Image 1 (tube, rainbow, N blue to C red):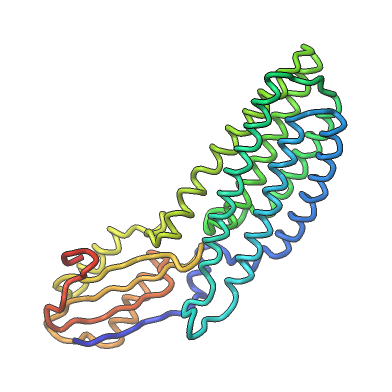
Image 2: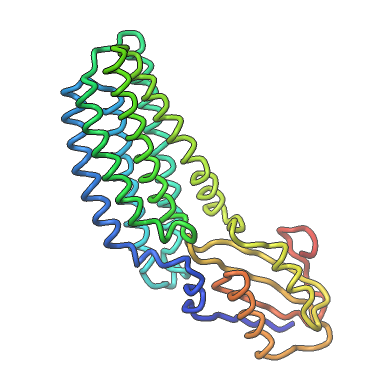
Amino acid sequence: MSGNHVHHSHDHAHGHGHGSATDFGRAFAIGVALNLAFVGVELVFGLFADSVALLADAGHNLSDVLGLVVAWGGAALARRPASPRFTYGLRKTTILAALANALFLLFACGGIAWEAARRFADPPSVAGATVMAVAACGIAVNAATAWLFARGRKGDINIRGAYLHMLSDAAVSAAVVVGGALVLLTSSVWIDPVMSLLVVAVILWSTWGLLRDSVGMALDAVPPNVDAAAIGSMLRTLDGVERLHDLHIWPISTTEVALTVRLVMPGGHPGDGFLRSVAHRLQHDFRVDHATIQIDLGEGDRCRLHGASA
């Protein structure tokens, strides 16, 4: 049995366009500042207008400020180098940040829904014009913040969380504008808590995918953008490979993927050039950044986790 570890630099992986979270430090700073200022505006005018929809949107925006701070902190911690204890560094904090973002939004949904239900029993009068004006400002603030993260949303779930939060906020603010207009036109104050429940529905819809993907990554599931079956098929077709053992693929951050595999090659060790070629294919074709490849010259033990050969 012979073991070999092949590790390529990350330069080529970044060429796929998924972008490093380090590129978004300024975006995080601007997004936090804009949204924190707007939360203060919404709270003041929400209390003045006695609008639960406006207060709900302020609470939602506050949770997004906290989410942006957590995501920013995760991205910063991910840049710390590996250590004897944390052998992959702290890259996985980006996954924990994405999960925290999803949980923040779920808690916000509960609070908004509770307050909206309470106001159905005794709906107060609402200053519709004030609600519309403040929420219209929110559309601009949230859309601008979402734009800051748009280019990184496809390759990094942490950045995607920030983008989705801001984009959903813009849509929610638009709904609040519509609600304020309806209150002005109809004088029906029950419209305000109804719009609050619509806010909850939008948040839940946009949060579900983030929650599902972040939980999967936290549990070391194969990232959704990595085709494990295709990787297995490619490895099995390599010259000299009789079978695979211990094929494992998992995320070590929201942008980096690790893989370990044992290739059973009874015909003899193929050499370092073969290992470098396989690692390059894994990185170029499947976006696997860290590949650990072991060559078994005999049958070798089967994977105890799988219960059979991979």
